[in-house]
Image 1 (cartoon, rainbow, N blue to C red):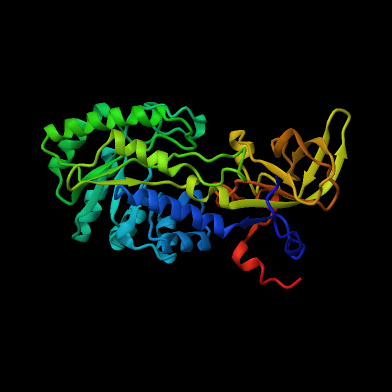
Image 2: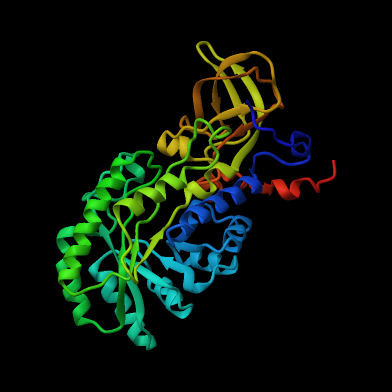
Length: 389
C-alpha cells in the first residue's frame, strides 16, 4: 500500500524537493524518549544525518542533545536551540577554530580521536584558561557487518584510538593539565540491523572499563554512539525502528554503575523515515533493452544510491495502473546517476510524481550543485496544508 501524499499541494511546488512528515518524526522522538527514559539513558541526535533547521528545532524541543562533527554543526545546533551543555563534538580532524568554538561555547565534551588531537585541545584550552572535558573515542575493533563506506570500528578505519594505544593515552592525560577525562566513546558503524556487532561491542567495552578501573579511572560517561538501522524496504509498515529492543540489549549486557551515565548518538534511526524526495517524471524512454523513467531529481539531490549502492523504495504517486519494469534514473550527466534498475512500478507517464522514500537521513544534507543544479528545497507536512492551490 502506498503512503498518501498531498499531490494537489505538490503541484504548486517546483520539483525536486524534500517532503518531511513531522508526525512520523515526532512519534519517533516520543518512542525513543520513552524507551531511553526507562534506563536513564542520554540521547544526542547525530546532526550529520540531517541538519535542516526545522528538523533540528523539532528535535531540540524534544529535549535531546546534539552530536556534532564540525564547527558548522555546532553553530547549527546552537541556533536550533540545543543547549551547549548537551552538545558533544566528535570527528577525526577538528580544526583549531572548531576547538576554540567548542571551548568558547562551553560545550559538554570533545570526543577525542588521537593523541595529537588531545595535545592540541590541551594547548588551546590552556591559552584560554579553560579546562576541556574530553571522552576518548576508542576503536573497539568490531566489524559492524555494514557497507564498507559506513563502518567505523575496525582496526583499519581512520576513527578512534586503537585498543593497544590506551595505555599511551592515559600516560598523556597524566602529563597535561587543561583537559579532564570524563568518559569514553564508541561508534562501530551505521545502518546496523544485526545484534551480533553490538554484542561484540559489549565484550570490548567491559574489557576496556575493567582495564581503566585498574588504572584508578572511573568512567562517569560511556557513549555507545549510534548505528541502529531503519527498514528501507518497508517504510509504510515499519516507520519506527525497534528502540525498545535496542536499549534492552544494552541494559541487559552493560548495566550502569552508580554515578555513571550511558549516552547514545542515533541519527538515521531518528530522521530516516520522516523524509521523502519528491520528483517528477521528465520522460519515459524506451531503449533497445531497457525502459527508463527519467526524473528531474538526480544524484545531486540524493546521492546514496550512487555512492553506496543504497536501496530506496520508489513509488509512483500519480498512477494506479498495472505495474511495469523500469530503470529509474536522473538527468545528471553521469552513468552513475541511477536510483534503481529493473524495479516494478505502476505505469509511468510524463509529469507523474515519484517519491523516493526513507530519505530523511543523508539525503538533503548531502545534496550538491554538480552540473550547476539548484539545491532542493524542503517542505513539511504540518505547514504544506497552508499553501493555496
